[in-house]
Image (cartoon, rainbow over all chains, first blue to last red; front, side, top):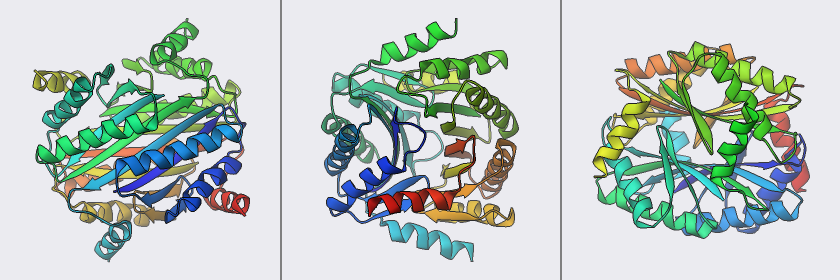
Length: 97
Length: 97
Length: 97
Length: 97
């Protein structure tokens, strides 16, 4: 399944980049291949349990970094027959030509 | 943590209510207290693993009901020191008076 | 079209209810019928321009209330042939019986 | 303001890439600089009215392409003192080093 998460720590001031960096480092340490964009981070996971582990670790790391409240927006795209993140972008780009 | 999920089965036609009903029944069977609104369903869960179980069961049920692709939008609000869904609405309403 | 907005002022501390109340009062003053839930507010608008007016007014009011940065999550459900917010919930509930 | 939109036409089958391509072409024709990712498209707009024009044009184009129902997820990040999409990613990457 393909996932995008946006992480918004609440109560740490206006600048969030230090906290987003913490989240990114969690993904890195967990060995996930991810794509950072200006509004979120996209990655693939095998199942919902793995996704929960990722979110749990980010949540814990943000609390440890001083955030008192974490807000997440998570989009999940799950096809019965698979579907890869590279294919989605490639497929759209081909059709714009 | 307080969670809102929106479930969008893709590839089952324009009317989704039959599938949303399937998702709602999963929440019911799992004993969760939830609030259905026109754009999603709000409930509380203890942790990310429990949330994963809920999503996994909805995902599986939708595939079984004929959906070939499930799209989810999940918002999560997690406070280090708790936070209840009734309190959020009550707190806002008090401040509008 | 049916819309849900979640408003997250960033840089105003951990408690957001005072700011959500400001957003709710904007909807009220604009004469919109809305439903507040613990994770967002659902309402109907006739078109995207009207939605923009609503968001603009909330955004401006939050800046005036002291928020230096506003984060919004907006879901929009637009059917070519209409669709009312009451009908969505009623239709799902009927199918869970 | 920085915006991410995810476009989900409902009732057109399982494969959506043809429709996402339509949305992308709207952004292109409107002269917006955008970044396509596997779960959405990120771009900058000056104000909410401009965002409404973009959404309206995508909505109309999708209806014309055969979609009977359009679902959008829109995230908006608006700072009182500006904020550029390149800066957000750069700022995070610097802090992961």
